[in-house]
Length: 96
Image: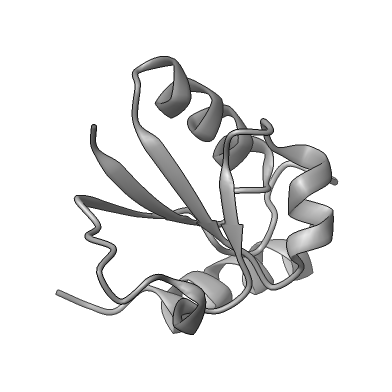
């Protein structure tokens, strides 16, 4: 079984990703800044943690999926909104 650590797992795409991961027999672990809200949005077999320190020291992670970011599907994209999205992506996604 693959273990996948997901940031942004309680968002629109993340919640669907976690559902599909479970269907594939994977073990999704969602890192959330608000675990109680995440628990209300995710399938019951999804492990939810509030901090990386909450992972078991022996826990191995096979895949890391970063879906965290400024929500993009919750309202219209004004010029100000587009600027916010671009800025957030630049700050949270390191350049390779």
